[in-house]
Length: 488
Ligand code: UD1
Ligand code: CA
Image 1: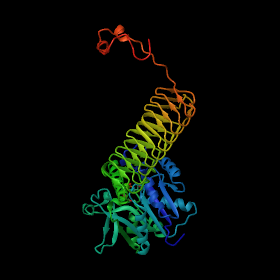
Image 2 (image 1 turned 45 degrees about the vertical axis):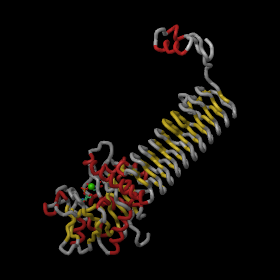
Image 3 (image 1 turned 45 degrees about the horizontal axis):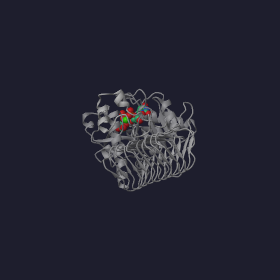
Image 4 (image 1 turned 120 degrees about the vertical axis):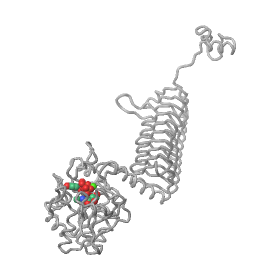
């Protein structure tokens, strides 16, 4: 471990989150912008590459532990069976580490599982200030527009931090203070352990407050420092769903601003939502009502939206994607999707391919320039380059038990309203007739016709529907009883 490396980050995430009024999820598992609240905290902590990363879990801990094991393997959890306060929670983490033979030396960062806008950079700045100032403890503070609920920072006349008083324990005079405790601290490991050993529970909530360590260390003659966040939004904590929505908005604004500064046009930030993992290239244009989730990536100069939701989808340079829902799809360069398309996992459109209006595609490849322009379902299919699939076609992939593939070669022209009963293959350059139910392979270059021959029954309307507008129109058109095409 290098001298400047953080010995440990402890993320507090055991609280009940009662104010969320959630039966299904503990507070820290509520997601915003593509990560859970605790996921944001862990991701920020990981940027410091700390020697130890411990999440204190308690309320609904099985769910939190499972989530961490799935998404953040290598993160250690410590169980705080009863939530007796933030100080007790940190003590629990130190005891769990000690039980595993881990003795901490150096800086320990304590952060919370309910502050998703906190970045690794802010944590690093806190750790840096803590060591360079030689503090026993350094608290991250902020001046907020509405301090209700937060612990207030009490400073001496000379500006030195003296103590933190919780909102519930504060006098009216103290409640007027706008500088609040973010809940994030840097401690010297040894002093932290000492101070935790001296915490009492003589407060309104009857809990061991981590915040009391500041006054304890100061009284013992140690330096207590503070870093004031440049932007209070970096530290906002979430206690209820109103704050969850506010934080989502703030984080989204930050993500959109970063995209715009990198050369992405966002026409309407108010109706555009990005997840943290979304990537992009310059000159991508995002039209209103668009949500980009997961590892979605926008290629250079592509246009996405309006009213489009993409999840884990790659959009190639210059592609157009309008009014579309796509999940796990790859959209090639200069390809065109929508309006009103649904691309499901495994849809791969090559360069200049098209999935047009009211088209659903699943687990299928469209070759370069291949087109499915209208009203079709393409599932478990391979369509070769330059082929055109007629309107209202379906690859009939499911026999009720198993799925089968349809293979259509290059430069085919299949007719409108075709059913391809898979498994079936249409050879390169072949055509099929409109209305065909294609049950047998069509050889390369052939025309496949698979429909009943048309017959016309001459004079049927005059005989069966006499006196109707149809009969009158037929009469006006010529001699009823003779047909032009086919025979009776
Ligand atoms: C806490 C701080 C307050 C600060 C605010 C910032 C204390 C006493 N108060 O208040 O000064 O302004 O955060 O958001 O520290 N937790 C546990 N175990 C417990 C209690 C809490 O793990 O026994 C966890 C919670 O899950 C949460 C975090 O600690 O992630 C903070 O707890 P919370 O109850 O939200 O504290 P606040 O009242 O917001
Ligand atoms: Ca809180």
